[in-house]
Image 1 (tube, rainbow, N blue to C red):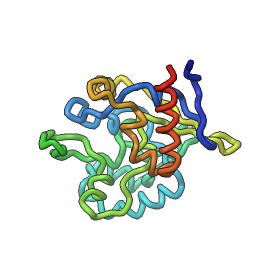
Image 2 (cartoon, helix red, strand yellow):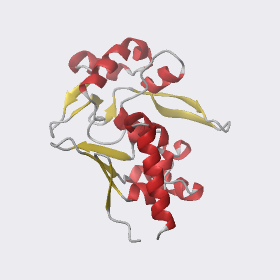
Image 3 (cartoon, rainbow, N blue to C red):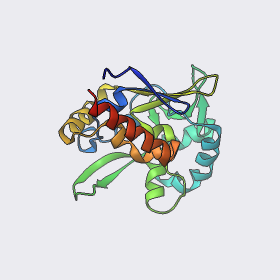
Image 4 (cartoon, one colour):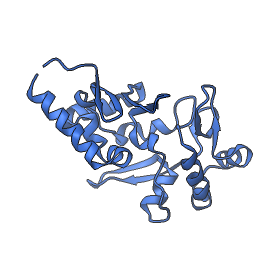
Amino acid sequence: MKIPPILQIGNVLLSADILTEEFCCDLEVCHGACCIEGDAGAPVTLDEVMQLENCVDEVWNDLHASAQAVIDRQGVAYTDQEGDLVTSIVGGKDCVFTCYDDLQLDDGTKISHCCLCALEKAYREGHSSFCKPISCALYPIREKTFCDGTIGLNYHRWDVCECGRVKGRKLHLKVYQFLQAPLERRFGQQWYKELCDMATLLADNP
C-alpha cells in the first residue's frame, strides 16, 4: 500500500511522516536548544496565556533578570509578525520561561547546566497544575487550525534537533510514539488509539 502524504483522523489532517519518521529528544546533546533558538516564541492560546499569567509568581525566581524585565514590559505573550499569539522572548530568541539547572534523567544520567522550562520544572516539583503550552509539548509536531476548524499536524525538521533524529533511529521510535503523552493530552486517548491503528495498518501493508 502506498502511503498517502496526508492522512486524516476525525477533523485532524496529519503528514504521513509523523507515522514513518523516527525521533526522540536527546537533551544530553542539545541541552534544550529548542527553547533558546529561533526568532519567535511558542504559539499559545488565549486560555494558555491566562494560565501562564497565573504561573508567573511561582516561577519568577527561576527566570533570568532580562526575562523578568520583558514580562514586566510586555507580559507573558505577544502577537508576532504573522499575527500569531506567542510567548514573549528575550534578545529576539530565548523564551522568557527558560531557566538553567542540572537535570537528572530517569536512567540516572546527569546533564549539567541544561536549558529547562521553568513552567515544566514547577509542574514536576508539584508547585503548579500547568505544565507548559501544548505547542511546546507537541514539538517537533507543529499544529495549524484552518478557517473551517480542521486541524493540520506537520512534522517540523529543525537542524538543532538532528540529535533527536539520530537518537530516534537508534531506538526505532516513531515521532507519534515519542509524543504519545502530548498527543493524548491534545486529542484524547481514543484519537491516539486510532492513530496507532492507522500506523499498524500502514506498516502491515507496505
